[in-house]
Length: 446
Image (tube, rainbow, N blue to C red; front, side, top):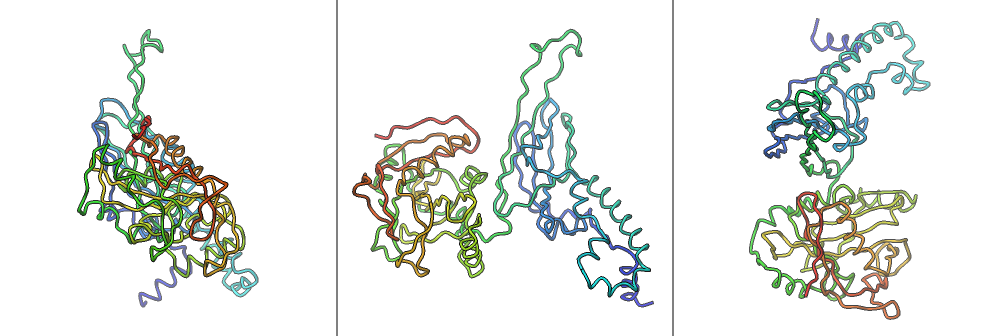
């Protein structure tokens, strides 16, 4: 019998399920961090890899698998805190159940056309039996490949997949390892006071963007940070250079002033993404597809977390990276734009930027589509929001304020490029980011 015909008959009588659990080509993209406590290896699987390994299209069901390997280098057992990894994680059987084969669902999807397949009902018992068998094998596979929640003994390692809800854009993953305290004297006659305080080790990963065309991807900021020339600054020189930065953004020609440059962020791009990532979303590039998504969100008053951000200009170019925090409606969100400078402080790149808050929409003759977002005129509130947000996230090593655009009050405000008025105390918030959680200190610039 010809091989194609044999394959067709198998698909007709049996539910095909052919995973490839031995494929480990994804390890070539592994993200690795290590310390004296542990070595942690993390790999986010893409749609094709997850389909190939597990035999079903997990991402179509909104499930993102992560491969995780932990090598315990400490002298105490380590335990992964799953809720820190993702509080909405799926158990292995829960993820498998979401992908189970269901004959009833397949027939129901055809609606009235299911009557066309009525003569094939004689095959239904075969399909039901094979689907049940495939589902059992799927359960066994998901369970065997999963990262299991149990202590990792000293010198040992644990590896497997963790299943999380799919979330487009860059993700910040926290791998927090809890170190168990040994019980003294074999547990005889000890009290709570005898126990040593357990210690935790935390590894923070910035997982590359997936599923959206983030605007910063075409800028290659990591490479640009490494390229020269650089201007290394001490505190005094940095303060003077920051005061000399342009007071406001401009249009493409540079002949009209826009929103005030009211933010300084010091830290490399990876640290920037991990500091903002858990709470802020990236922005997509402006294309026909993203314009349609934006228009749809605007007309329906719904959320579009990755909506493109209009370009503003500084140093003769549009923003290098744009982030945003959206509410339920696309018309209400914070916009944050950053530009990489040639300045370096402690070897770290210095970004200057602009942040403002959209509070609605209005008509205007200054844009091609005759509408624009209405900006909250109290631009200092959006600036201070960023400071408070990073303080709460404990990702600020130092923060302070330095002279910027100059003060103006509500009685005599300035205007941005679309005619929105704004008032400000004229200061710029300056934030030195921390790679890990830390307690902040405040700097009084002089």
